[in-house]
Length: 110
Picture (cartoon, rainbow, N blue to C red):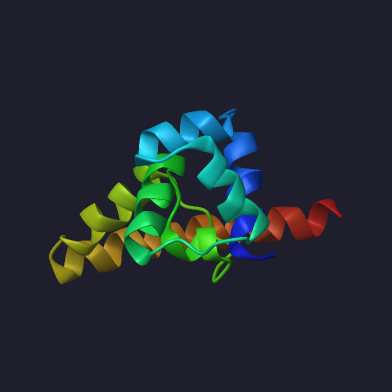
């Protein structure tokens, strides 16, 4: 999917009109519609504003990744990255164990 399609899907998922999104980024709903249709391309500054307004990363918005991280998940990752190495490794080990257990349960349930 391209930027315009991603933008439209996320906007609709959040229940925002083009006008509401436009207002939150300092433009009109008509301009938002033109972005979504691909008639015009926004500047990188506007893309950042759109991503912030839709609460997604720029990478997700432009289709570079399909990983959608909410602000809480991003803050958790930031907090983990600030831990001392031994604590960080301990937390990451716990996450690895939980993921392994989840995958095993999923495999056996199939």
